[in-house]
Length: 215
Image (tube, rainbow, N blue to C red; front, side, top):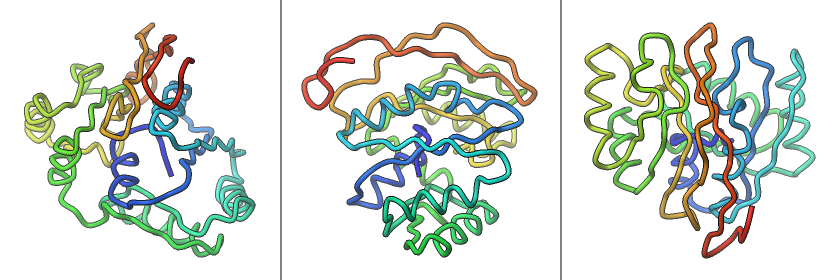
């Protein structure tokens, strides 16, 4: 289960071997930063050499259509990046149970700061592409080994989760040791929603050494 963000990506790293990423497209009341920038969410997965499935879900049928799709592709294992939100875990357990797949949640129960530290030590570089109101000054900031401690302190001081587990902020992975090249894009604007602000990004043409030769 993949969004293009740091936590779902790192869950796949911790899980070890897997076959493909799956991006589920929901009809949210407010736009999702990952779906506003869906092309980049797909591309950051492709740059690791893995295929990416994208499944559009109809409002009111999200659960059933997710289960049906997992059955269609004969999914034996589902990997998700939940950390401590019980409702998310219970939903994923139900999806796994109904689809006949094993659920793996490699980040579950970890301390949020510990997860962030591990992500940065691993070498993930990510940009903050969506924030709730009150965190606008973090929009566009990059999370790297040199910057994450400052950003984590800012979030803790304001009483927010350093991972953004409850949707305080969202990221796109720009690079990691698994990537064949950097995610190449430019910022073209910002979108204001009921919950906050979203960066609008477009992919640039580029070449990389391995994997995708040209986009």
